[in-house]
Image (cartoon, rainbow, N blue to C red; front, top):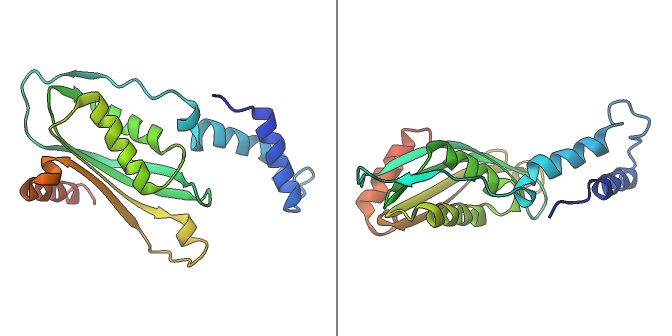
Length: 191
């Protein structure tokens, strides 16, 4: 489904009018309704309207059974409660099964999953689910650490507040040594 840009832009105009902004005469705001519409549809909520990125996967011909980690991957999303930005980073750990995923696809998939109104903990599960569907790894870990502007700039205004969410599956859930290895790896990657 593609949203009706004209209808969205009219709604943004009405919101700015209701807030009392003179956007029609302020040279800095004249194009704001168009810009907000484009930003929400094409970028901030693009994951809702664009197809999932094509994920190049290939056979694990060397039978790699060792843990690897990818990250930090930039995280940009919107809190579904306040439509306030969520900004942070993700790390993904995998012990492959029969298939491998192209390295850049972890970033593309993360961007697509996060580009929608969401809760961080739900996005973390969705990202893990999407990876698991494609490559069926023996172990999978997804960790997201982010700042939520619904906490940092409104409400309690706690500027230093961060949220960390994780999903651990397979050996990363069941084996404490494997989980510790993953956490050690991502600490070395800026976690």
